[in-house]
Image (cartoon, rainbow, N blue to C red; front, side, top):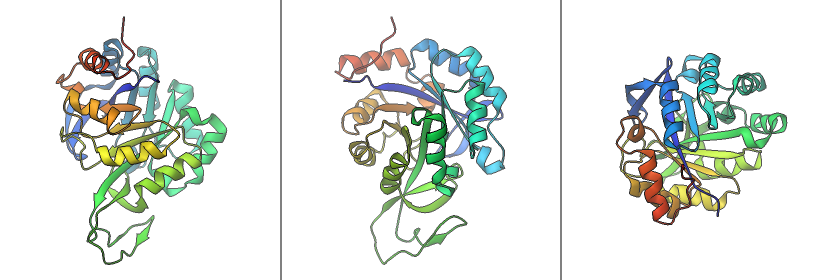
Length: 273
């Protein structure tokens, strides 16, 4: 059985790590490169750096930050935020990133996934899916990318959001997850906006549905607050990796303790010597 991965996520704004609740109310959590190096020493399996305002502000991810991380960190890391072309991906990989994460650009131009997978290989293309449960009332919306006129229904569904969670789309999350795999994505980074930062646990039902139907790894994100939440997402949620931010940034859970406990509970883990 493949080992499960523990992945700290560093949401980066102006070179600093920040963390909020439900994608808002951000607070500073330290220097991104220093934190990344600390997590690598602690036994993290991978890192994810997300420039959370890159798409909103219309600029590319900071290449210099990637170079600093590559010089300092000795484990694989993924970079996302504002990536919209083959040139962007090439620059990030050349700067030292192991993988890139795309979200808004993939929704805007799904063929980009195909193009990047063909050019660079699926193994380094991660499609991030920010998803939120939306009521029938909220479904009566439109934006520049999609329009949706909902039927009369009281059921809640999960819709994909872009631009750092600021823009809802008409894309249904489960269907979009299937499509990105078909187009060549190597991994899915699934973030539940409903649980993000709440520390009440991952979105287990949605994660399980997507994981069971995917032939590529699914990274679960949003809601980790206890060691038990990771156990749940690896068992009930069937995720391949668990990603978290604030519990690591503010040292509420230490990575060695987390991995040792999960290993003792029968979850396959890569343990540091």
